[in-house]
Length: 168
Image 1 (cartoon, rainbow, N blue to C red):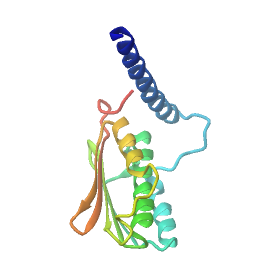
Image 2: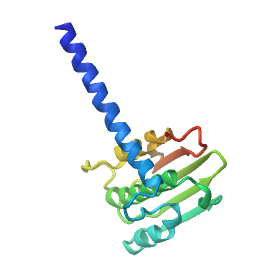
Image 3: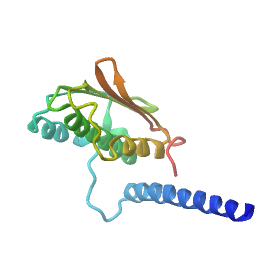
Image 4: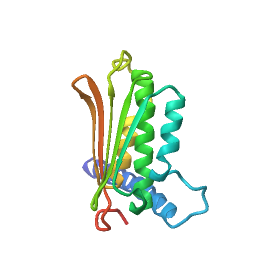
């Protein structure tokens, strides 16, 4: 019985490791210029923000640092985190003002999105918003916090950009 339980645990750990590896390899394939259509990245933030504004969300975007030097995998995942944050703000708080800050430093990209909590904040909604953000940040060995901060909802992510920090 002990051996069977141990083998099951090893098999589960192996499957989880393979799933993580598959995700990282997908990121690296994209980085190497796979045959997929180009994925949006931090260079596409203006279009993303314009789209949110056209959906009725007043967005204030502040950028610090040059996004052009961010590794493509990090840039794409940072874009996706901002995209998910804007979607979540609209879904959970309605068309409330959202402040987005993107800071590019020598060692990391830092993202912060804040918005008023709104009337819908306590209503459970299905989806993988924050869980998806956590997965993206985890693969890049970054940090994420998401939750109420006083009267506001705050999402903050830090994604390392140094070559020794990025998987691969």
